[in-house]
Image (cartoon, rainbow, N blue to C red):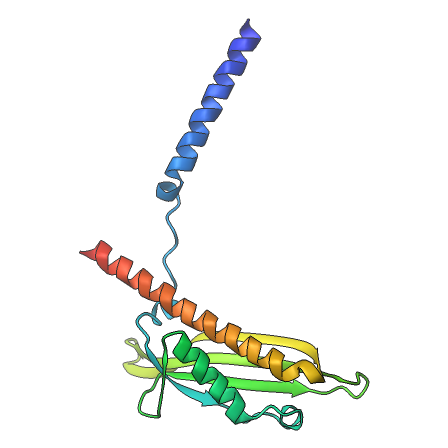
Length: 181
């Protein structure tokens, strides 16, 4: 009888602890505040797009700066971000790297880099600096005949990630502003 009561008590305590833990989890463990560099992306609607010169091995395989830029502009617009001309200081920089190894025929190693810089005030030094607040890369080793399709797909993924981060930052800032009222 004592063993059965102990089991029932243990089961009841376990149930209560689980119920409190599960229902109280959001209260006990609030979501961490988004980092300031990510939060600085909130409300971003326009960026100046800068596509660095495409390296020779990629150009030799048919990848042009114009193709990269038009793909980036299309994906940005689709994500609700307007590519702007030189009049704004928020810069989305796209850079591609390539490496051919003569020992690996028909393949090329590549890196696609996406970096966003924007002005940020640093009170301690009394200056506004142009600082990176978002960066992502994609890299791989690909068959040369598949390269252009793969590069454009990676660019799409990186820019969509950038747009998603802007959306998260915007929602987080709205939440913070609501909590401060």
